[in-house]
Image (cartoon, rainbow, N blue to C red; front, side, top):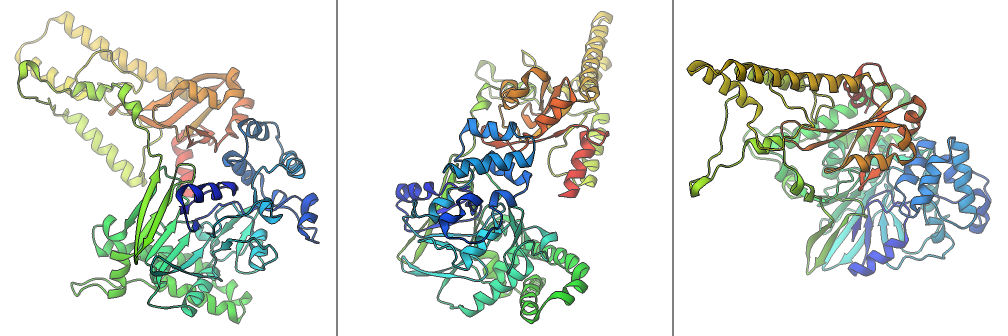
Length: 589
């Protein structure tokens, strides 16, 4: 049974193992490796006076853990997030609960005192939000928990199951390019600090050394990582060097798990190769900037690990000039299979091993589309199929006005030059016939582009009565004035929050409920709708009547509406509108 993001709820491992009759569990990160408070440390025979996981984590990490913890009740979550303005107060509240035998962030302490036991073997890598000190204690056997095995660069496990020999490798932590050569607070090769862990170059080097020592061509190799090799070229190269047959990863938090190989999602071998080239280029850009410093601090053993890491970065297949693909690269391109897991709260993946075959079943709550049954958009209304009198259905397709074609082309070019891959947060469609995003007519009407075509053709044939022509002009002016007024009103309010991640079909009431403690201060809620499709864009503006409540409400970023995590920020932090704020954020990421 393959799981992701248990987030401290170790009890659910036993429940799910029983439900699915699982022989083993593999977990891909953020399982909840968090220690106990200082007052309870004596229960676990630790003589050290070091800080607890709560003390080590930053305020941002603590609030993230509280927001998504499945073991905290809704009332407790609301109280912890809103009643403690300082990190000192928040830590004190969490420590008080822990000292009172109430687990808030993780039930890992119950495993330490053996009040909770794992019924099946669990093989897990660390995630993005774990305590590096706890991981080091597990590696050094200072913490011994039956049936819990941490997959890291220094270990591998061989499972004889279903007629195959399954070799497990693991590399935990988030993939953060600029931290590849930063060990943080880690004392060995495990890197991390302040409640987070990440991958380093030396970890990769040691993992390769571990894999070389146990290599057996009769084994099936499974690489478990937190970050996905499908997105990170360097991890794809690592899988290539390890000769991995399968990979398991998470960290994307999709509502449905993904199962694929590179051959199924890229058009040709050259595109696959380019992903690896991009990974190599990014790595050497960082390595060359810190190379001189590394030469001064690395010992002989670490130099060997660094050489192994550079072997990963340099493992780039050569171009295919019609001479066929190198056999090992073709194996990776066509036969290495990748699984990216959704959070355990919405799904999992079952690997079924029997008679030498390895199959899979993906379980997922999936996506919600029922809201579309209640939507009738202007775009759909303008393209309704005419099927009167039993005649064949015809769809009226209108040709855009020439000026509108030019305008749309200019918009497309400007998006491409800016590197925009998603929806633009505050796009203004410059067209006299455009429809306001929130304006949905009660009756079917023609698309906006059809007004120009019809107007030109009618004018060339028979001029309409003056009164009718004046009426059309007045309607167009009213629409322009309404859109201009609405946009200006939103931009003029200095106390506005911008929210991303709004689920489809979300209502104003749901947004207001998300900011429930600030309801009296909310003056307006505007959920953005794509004026071409009529579908919500997942974006929203919330206006407040004062700056204090607006800034306090911004701290709710990371919360969720219907399991859709929201990103909340001030709409005009830089005084330049959301567009620039969004662009700066993307660049910083």
